[in-house]
Image (cartoon, rainbow, N blue to C red; front, top):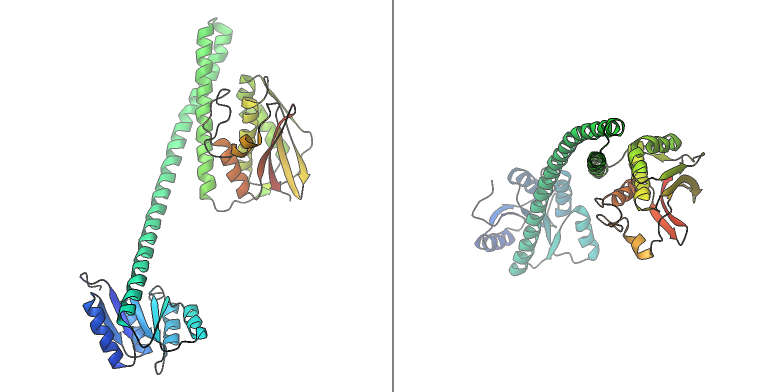
Amino acid sequence: MKDVLSKGTLLIVDDVPANISILFEFLTNSGYKVLVAQDGKKAIQKAEYAKPDLILLDVMMPGIDGFEACKILKSKETTKEIPVIFMTALAETVDKVKGFNLGAVDYITKPIQQEEVLARVTSQLNFRNLQKQLTLHMAELETRNMELDAFSRTVAHDLKNPLNIVVGLTDILIDDCHEKIDDENILENLTSVQQAGQKMVSIIDALLLLAGVSKKAEVEKTTLNMKDMVEQIISQRLFHVIKQYNGTVTAADEWHSAQGYAPWVEEVWVNYISNALKYGGQPPEVRVGSSVEQGKVKFWVHDNGNYLEPEACAQLFTPFTRLHQDRAEGHGLGLSIVQQVVKKLGGEVGVDSSHNEGNIFYFTLPTE
């Protein structure tokens, strides 16, 4: 058990009693609790029992020498993290390298200078304490992140369910207004509620996707049926957005096969196509398709929007960047999430813009 009044516990290992005596007195007077051992075998036993904060280990000893003792200490779960400083008269570089390769953190060359020993011991213990604090902080941060992730997912799901009900019922009310109520104000207000609800759902979807991308190290990739996926997105998920902006989305008849994770890739398409509708021409005309370039499949969304300067293109995939705040409101996360998703799937994102020909937003995925 560590002495709470000491700066730390040291284990001195040396077969020469005079050396131990000098270091013991000096380091004890310097505020350390000092343990001693006179051979490698006893040093290993004492280290396992007492778990000192640092070991000062002589190299040249009979029986188990310092190199072998260090090797054994570093092989044991209970002692492998204890820093070891070698004490030796050996000045050859090859011997020092051997010690470092075995896990030593420093060398003190004999004859020993007391102030040098104190400086090196203090330095290594300070470094060790910082490592321990960092490990504790990282463990605490990981726990907090897990709690925050669980909380955010719960809140997001709890918000999304009633929001879907609001949006669905608003759709019904709008249809009823068209058929039974001749009041443009009511219809306009209901449409605003509908659009606000859809926007909130899209934000929640984006946050859930971001949490999933950040949490998962790897996902199982499969061959994607991109034709069916895109058609479903256009006819169902983006039906209201297409209607709202009076846009058209034309999909290619033939699609190239690629590997990916369907839930993530679907969100990439939703982000790209919805942005093309919001920020494209007036009215927006959008085309989507694929091609093969440099061994990867390139999927693209071609809009009829205004030319984007290179500086603007460079900012598009930065979180919370919005280049068209006068056209449509957004949370500024969409394209940054797209970039993270595609990168995780082994692809790249980008945009090509040209005068009078609109903009092509693309992402690549590995082929089969």
